Amino acid sequence: MEQALFDGQLVHSRRILYTPSPFARSNLLHVQEAGSLQARAPHASARQGLTSYLVFLVESGCGTLTYAGNNRRLQAGDCAFLDCRIPYEHRTGRDLWRLRWVHFYGPNLGAIYKKYQERGGQPAFRASQPERYRALLQEIYETASGEDHVRDMQLCSQLFGLLTLLMEDAWRPGAAHAPRGKRRSAQEVKDYLDTHFAEKITLDALAERFYINKFYLTRVFKEEFGQSISNYLAQLRITQAKRLLRFSEESIETIALECGLADANYFARLFKKVEGVAPGEYRRHW
Image (cartoon, rainbow, N blue to C red):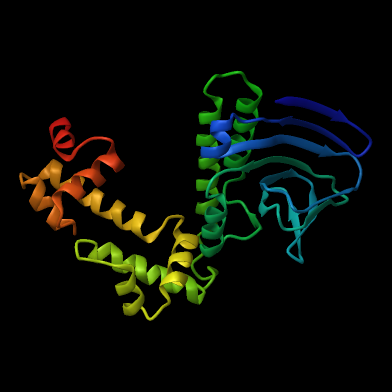
């Protein structure tokens, strides 16, 4: 972790380079860099190929953003949310801008960004509540600058708050991207699993029902939802089993059948693998 204050001819900036723990890097949303800058002269900054996502807020002034071949003019109160693997350039205008930003990364962030786009989210947009972005970005900077022994967890929580705010601003049903064919196929399979999980389901049967190659289905389902079909099905069944164990007096064998698992022993093993306790112990605990 390194704090830097840069006072040059082009910009006055304050930033922190953050090094998350190995656990945070592997399991949590984590900050890479956060800070703010005040432009002192017209200039441009360009990046590409970074394994990072960037959120920045224009606090004052104006400028332009070039991203994915499109130019967008930005002014005070505008935000940007960018996948930094894609080339981008931002350039201050005559009215020299002040920016506040965070670079961050984490597991499944690519899927989250895809969902942001599907909801109608744009690389740059007019923030509905700029002050909330400013406060969150400042909070992230202060936490990353501190010495709290749980700051990785605090930063993860703050980044999720930032993503929630972005999703709220993204929601524009009329502008949302139409699902591509493979997305539609994966969603149809997911919808089917959500309502038929108590039945006997095999990959071959799903492929036949939806007229899709089973290997292709396996791949696109994981791309869209971040887990395999078998894991998602197990999650649905265990969730239903937990409801029945807590709110019914049915036997464990009956519950296993109602969750689509005829073998009670296999059900017990699967339940313990997922929840860490046997079904009977889970029922007694609750």
